[in-house]
Image 1 (tube, rainbow, N blue to C red):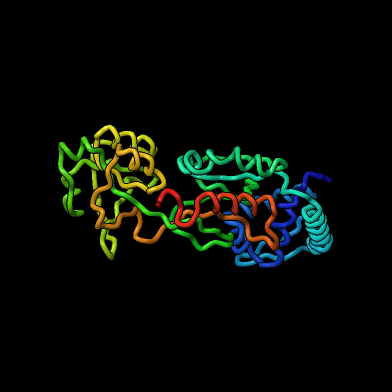
Image 2 (image 1 turned 135 degrees about the vertical axis):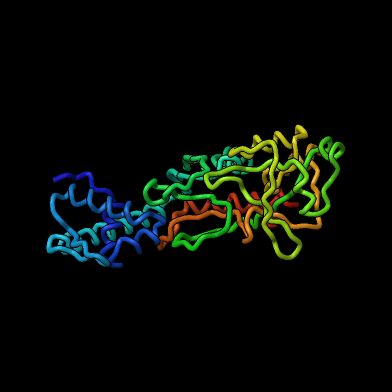
Length: 306
């Protein structure tokens, strides 16, 4: 018998039994069906017996699986009870909060506040993962994801901090040399510094009421936003970036907002800055205080849009 069975293994097994397929479990936990299936294969190896019958469109429990489900459900119930009692007795939120956030946003709008947060909650520990890649919250044991973009249908709960506002901007030196474009069509004659990701060059969506796509181009592309901001400040061209990213450069006059009668974005749909967390019956106090702290710091509207 291998005793290296995690509570996550048991939780996934019980959910698979509840919903009858791996796809629904994966959807609710923002995992892939293949990762859920792999976890179940590993669980069967650990307990040393087959727990699930895998059919084309559904799964069912073996005789051993029925017995395992009965007892493991009680294990989860007891764990939840103990966790709730510990949290209720705690004088202050405590424990480790594992946070995943985009690199640039974390640098500008999370990292500066961490010392104050830890001073307010001395029993709290923070583990910050700065990455622009999606981390599976269940698989990676992430407590809180800060995500920016078009909200996706998800089983995760969401706290929206702000709608994302974009600004087209260039340096005073660039505008003095090349002039300021007045319409989206005029952008095609300008040097635009464009973010390049896994899907290629990012498209710009510009309009007054309706946003239309424009394939702009220029002499500098990068998968790092800070590089493009530096290029724009140095006079290389025009950028389209969220206000939270270039707010300080705009305040300092290093960049100047242009075409202010137009709206801009990198998608036709409205984007948000949000905190996402797993859909549990009771949100842990340690996670709640982090969300509330950041929401208070950002304000309404967020300080970068004031």
